[in-house]
Amino acid sequence: MAPIPRIPEPPRDAPESYVGLDADGAAQLARTRGWRVVRTLPPGAVVTMEYLAGRLNMEVEDGTVTRCWAG
View 1 (cartoon, one colour):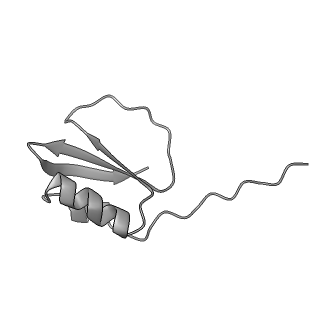
View 2 (view 1 turned 90 degrees about the vertical axis):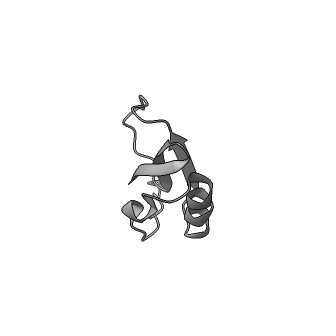
């Protein structure tokens, strides 16, 4: 039988703390806090609903993070 995969714990960080920050600076900060993948998206972007542990999604408008969530 194959071993059960171990899903890594996401960083203990508050995604809402990135709202209002400059997108480039927020992405760098997120990586230093342990997020493995930082994805920036335009407002209203269509994204799939799969959850990826360690990914931080940032909705960015005019270079500023307007919404942020894990997965």
